Image 1 (tube, helix red, strand yellow):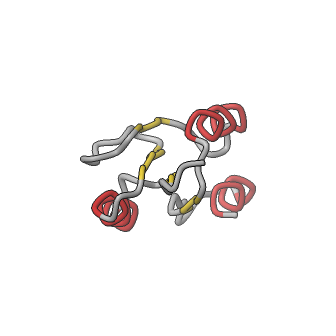
Image 2: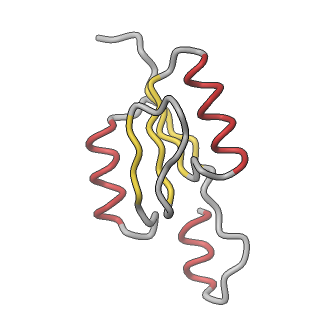
Length: 90
């Protein structure tokens, strides 16, 4: 069993996600990032472009990354569709 902590950070290209990912990498974590637009954060072990409302895409990312921790920082701040608003944020 490895002592390496593996983080999956959703919303990794956002303000908070980017900074958290950089801090985790600097602290020795293996970090994978997910965003809707693609990832451009230095030091990530892997990056994924996925919509969190696409269960198959999320399942595939989790299966590949095998995270020990998940930091859910992806958010939809406003959406005319309340179902999507809650689906992403909850």
